[in-house]
Image (cartoon, rainbow, N blue to C red; front, side, top):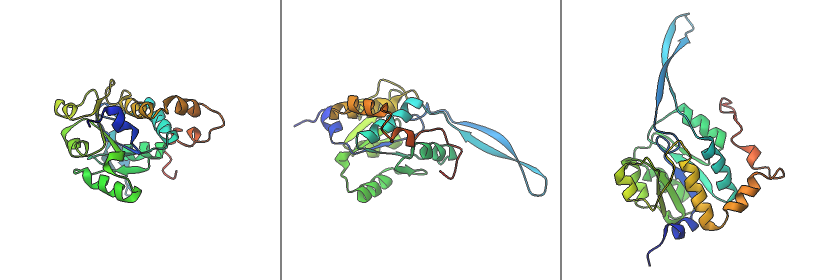
Length: 206
């Protein structure tokens, strides 16, 4: 029997995202920052910055309320990603991963889940090995043609413009949990929403 995208989404327990082009629009800002040295000299350090969608951040709360865990798997290494991941209290953060099935296998072993229970959201060919094996493969609207061709679902929005939110809401809708999770996220008595994504990205101790 051929499974529909909704059938696949209903089984998901863990959602993993690429970062550049998925949780961002793919633009990488690199700018010089002067840094003082102990001897009084000044050296220039190159700093990387990225822009993230607040809609995606809110979606991480919805995913948690729906009983799922969330993470990122990216080829690049960036302190910006580390900061945003701490903001969102992501359960899985893997940077510097050129071969993304390695961390996926590690997550499977740690969490006791199967590939059918993992969703992956990507945009480029480096994401294909995971997308070809995971239970629910999602391509963002700005993904490469080859990636869209192998996805079970393509988001209506582009990376960095709410594509992550699209993926999470699709899964929750398939599970019949979307409305319930939205209502829980705006319930003053629910402690989860205030425990994450509260804008303390600069607090490295959190």
